[in-house]
Image (tube, rainbow, N blue to C red; front, side, top):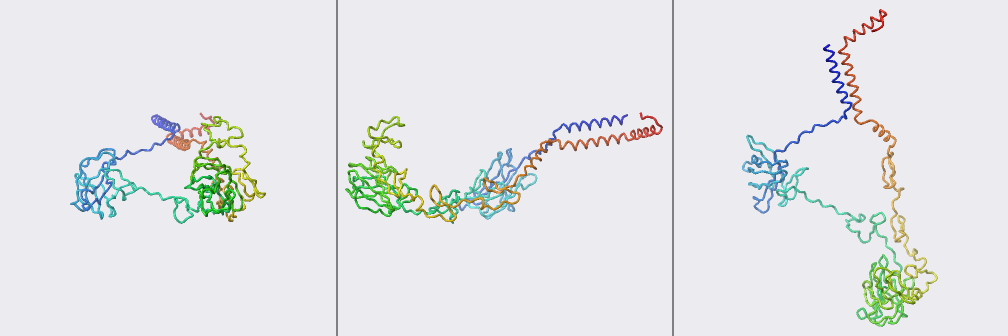
Amino acid sequence: MVKAQIVKSISAVVISILLFVVNSSFRFIPVIAAETTISFPKISEIYPNGLGSSELGTEFIELLNPSSTTLSLANYKLQIKDKPNKVMNLNGEIPPNTYLAFITSFALLNSGETVQLIHTGSTEEVIEEIVYGSDATEQQSWSYFTEGWELAPVTKSLPNQRYALEEPPVDLCPATPEIDTTIPSGYVLDGLGVCVQETPIQQEECLIEISELSAQPNYNGSEYLEFINTSNVTANLSLCKIKINTGAEKSLANVQLAPGSRYVYAVTNGTIKNSAGEIILVHSNNQELFYAYPATVNSQVVNYENGSLTGFISEMPTPGTINETMYTSEEEATTGASGSEDLGSCGSGKYRNPETNRCKSIESADSTLAQCASDQERNPVTNRCRKVTLASATLVPCNADQERNPETNRCRKIGTTTTDLKPCDSGQERNQETNRCRKIANTATSSSLDSTAASVPSSFKYKIPLIILLTTTLIGYGMYEYRTDIKNYLNKVKEDHRRGRPPG
């Protein structure tokens, strides 16, 4: 009877444990050891090569208290190993996480020594022993970092600091042997951002325009024509010639004019008529542009907008600089504050230029333009005459590995295509956006694994083996305890069967 009660009690305990395991989430909480309190200081900096010839009094050894509590130094001393005459007893305290330097009472050898931090008491114990080298200058100390000891700037009683690392300059043009921080002359960035040698454009046409004309002696007692390079490449003035009124054709100097730059061509007073006339700009291909100008009086000049062959009078001569126009009554500058609704009427026979808000005579809009030759066409932007084939006929053919940029007409390297790329390895595919090889994702396998993993709770896979183990243990223990009863019961069943009696 007592045995049966014991078995029942054990069974109840086992079942309770089993139910607890089944209903638990199996969160195994690791045992976290308590943080070990560092109860001694650490040598953090050694300054052995003090300033001047007499270094004593400037050399120091620095200690660090890495703990969260204040440390007393009453039982500590600093000493040079095997040199009992080089010892210094410490006193005072070091606050938590603080660096504190101690001026040494003995000289530290520049050639290197072994510094010891010793805890004194009933017995002496070497807490730390540091060997420093012989390379420190007067501006350096041996400093401790997580990676070890190294030479660093002197930081007396302050956290140690490393020297700032100088970042190497970025070479913007690897095509040249030297390192370039700016794109050097003769090189440009292509469409892929690669620095390549610039393909020179063969200039065969006049690229300048007239921007200002003075029939008065407004330039050091001389009349003048001001030219401007409105292109995006350097212009050679020698490719242009001029005719002033009905005078002979004149050549211009062999001057290289940068894009956007101006050049003043001075002529003797009286060369340009004060009354209305025209200046003819002759290109190397004999194309002629007729710049008409009105009559002017003293201190007046005629300004031309980019691409325009019709000038307007200004009271402000600006030879060699940007035009700053003061208008006359012939072409009045309006003073509207914000928009055309504030501008007055231009009057009969005139119209308002929508770009400049200036009043201009209607008959001067197109009547002054000379008819283009049979092999020429008028540029709708500049109103200049140009040869029909001029746009591309004068360009030098590009090399075999180049193509012409439709926007700039410059030759540039043909960008790398996918046919130039090395084939990807087996099991890889090419990324269409980056052209890089990447592994082919096995979507079917990964999805089936993910679905299987999602269907089984993470904690349940641990419960099933434990349930089976506990159940087997319980059944085995019960059969062992009741082995005699089970044996008697089986014998009784066997005897009843032999005598023909029903089991009961």
